[in-house]
Length: 294
Image (cartoon, rainbow, N blue to C red; front, side, top):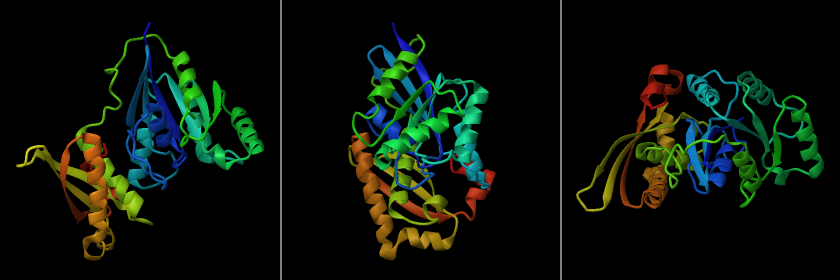
């Protein structure tokens, strides 16, 4: 008897949703950095275990923001509630319930989707704080299960997986059993470049960045994939920071991204990065669409 279902992962920025997804799937399908608001698109991760297939949808962090890009990310996250069988609500909140958490839970309640409560980063909390947090949240939402975890630790999500599988409806697999994500090659490459930018730059620079893969082709040398990427910034000053003295920072970004691409795609890569300026692109619905966010 096969079981299958879709599980949305929702929460505020930087609570560990992508880390949780990667841990459950068993490989990196969503980029991860220490900075909030890294995820901009819905990312699908697939875990097939025996006769059960779990299809996870990682989402951008939901928070109040007025930029067009913020509104796009919020819409992407909430759209994940449509047609799912279960929600994993993730927070690292200790203390009072954050307004953004309360808003997310109100939307889940509107959809009448069952939800599990995932309290992440409990290694940074004391036992009393964990219990108090669970108590506060269970008073405002009828969660089916509660899981205090540290998603960075191996084995931390085993109990979550078991409960998810027991909750799945009967049904056929949606994807081949060896498939872990539905990401295209272009999307994977653009995300890896963006991840390295987030890891190596500070302040507003990573948030003003969009990466567009303009072309992928077989190189003249056999077994080499040639990739041309455009990195868009919002201001000339940001372009200078990203390139760095003598092009050093851009070269480091390219080297780190290329090495991981080669590992993930199993082929040699020639990566060409060009930095361009499109003024205030994150404020414009048209430019946001041009960057691939639609």
